[in-house]
Amino acid sequence: MLILGIESSCDDAAAAVIETATAGIAEVRSSTVANQDDIHRAYGGIVPELASRNHVITITAVIERALAGAGCALGDIEGIAVTRGPGLVGSLLVGLMCAKGLAQGTGLPMVGVNHIEGHLLAPLLEHRIAMPYLALVVSGGHTALFAVEDFGRYRRLGRTRDDAAGEAFDKVAKLMGLGYPGGRVIDEMSRKGNRKRVRIPRAQVKGAPLDFSFSGVKTAVATLLATADGRAELPEDLAASFQEAVVDMLVKPTVAAARELGADTIALTGGVAANSRLRVRLAEAAAAEGRRLVAPALKYCTDNAAMIALAGSYRLLRGERDELTIDAEANLAL
Ligand code: KG4
Ligand code: ZN
Image 1 (cartoon, protein in one colour):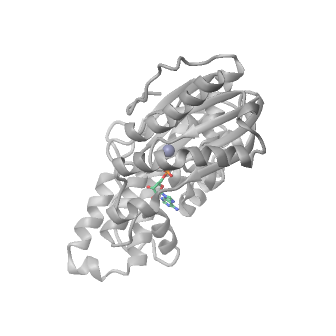
Image 2: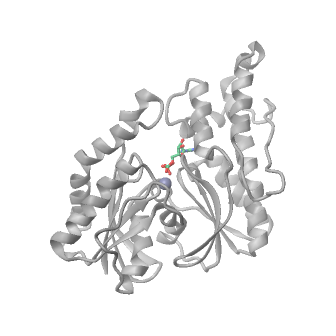
Image 3: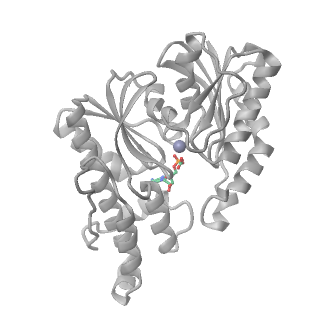
């Protein structure tokens, strides 16, 4: 089955074509993303109104590029999967309306997909992983641990109580005057820094060992930068020390959750999965307990439509379809 995936939940407009015959096993024929970082950079964060307006401008071309990249025409497509939430409602609406229009015009079945389900299943685009597996979704908007028990069966084991980890990277980068988005810059700077140089307290959520909290580390950096001593630290050392604190706070609950679930595989996904230190530390921690870390290629960690197509595919393969009356839902629960 050839499936067209469409994703526009935040600031990336993406389309992809996958080919699949069995749930969870797919070949990505094409995956295209129109990134808006250059538009939002001047504001130090995503401006929802600008995100949706730009989706309107780019989405058709993105879909056409995905079809051309897959070497096929709309007439070859057999099903459409589109993100319907969670995300920015204006952004979601652009992709969803586009998918509905295509479905209405062609008669193709369409299914609405939960964006988080896309992230949870993204590791399957490149790897065979036995279920249940543990997934750490860590991005600018989300930080959570899920047991992936089956297609459509996910159990949340832990979540952030405040900021997402990527949000902490972005906010600290902003405090340090490093621009937006800041995760990649901090990651690169940290390679030249001493991660033990600056003391950053690690936060744990009392009574909830699988939950996360990142607002404290952000405040710690802000407080430090308000002092002359703090400002005298080398930015590389500060970046590396902050990053190490975030990584510690991600690794500990993840390992504990894998142990609790008895999962052989830990899958790492979301934009922060690009972090080089997190990949190394989590791989080491997993290996120390005889578990395997699977981290998808960067293009499948960040927002993309191949993961949305995959997350919609098991329903389309069963012959299911959603009514064209489904709505975009900013807070759609998994
Ligand atoms: O998944 P994503 O592309 O968008 C959503 O938030 O859904 O993730 C973007 C987030 C941003 O917060 C960005 O700063 C962070 O991922 N990020 C990183 C790295 N690359 C991107 N954080 C830490 N280290 C990186 N190398
Ligand atoms: Zn995402």
